[in-house]
Image (cartoon, rainbow, N blue to C red; front, top):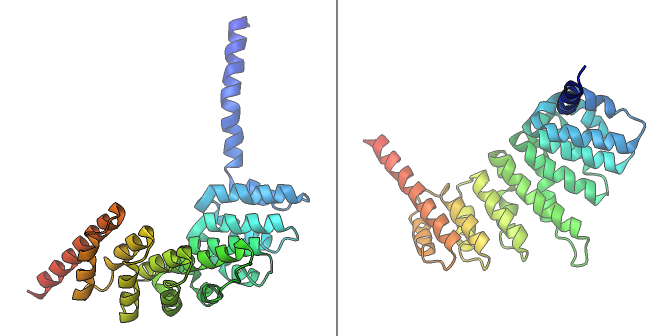
Length: 271
């Protein structure tokens, strides 16, 4: 064989080898098998790779549920993250994830709460536990992860959506919290839950005056979805058109356009 042919063959092998190896590693079964490794590092890496596959790894959910009970904290955390990345197809894991929240390790709890939100509406069984997390106010000298768990619990309730209506009172209270992070998540979640009540509308109109521009913008966005028949809400959004922040003005303008479209649609149906 000529030298040039050997070089070409070697180049072809180098190009094709990663593709072949990659195709093996893209199969969930390969990484599910690795979850049984005696090495905690390998088990953790396997969970991480399954998470990167996202919904394609749905068949791995039962093994990842088992991994939530692994003796190694790193493996448990990686399993929780992976279940969140798989998303709604990981709904079978929700009951075990709620049980895991009885664990004292804050890092694991933080990963589990975030994953519950990523699973979405099918994580509704976790709503009571998430409500309690939002309700519990950490001490000033508490571990920052405690605050993160609280913030992510408020966000997860919104990601669960209308199935989390029981959380509305605690989210209304949280929208007045001293922490802008919690206020922001609470306001966003109130819009996502879409509970059209006087208490929610008052909280969101009040949030239009929040010192933090991102919260005012979130409040305007939420008001574009609820309280469509409340004239005072439209007046509040019209005032937000003069907000000094460009994002708030844009959110208010978009919310008003949605409310106007909804009103026109209602009139059309009535005629």
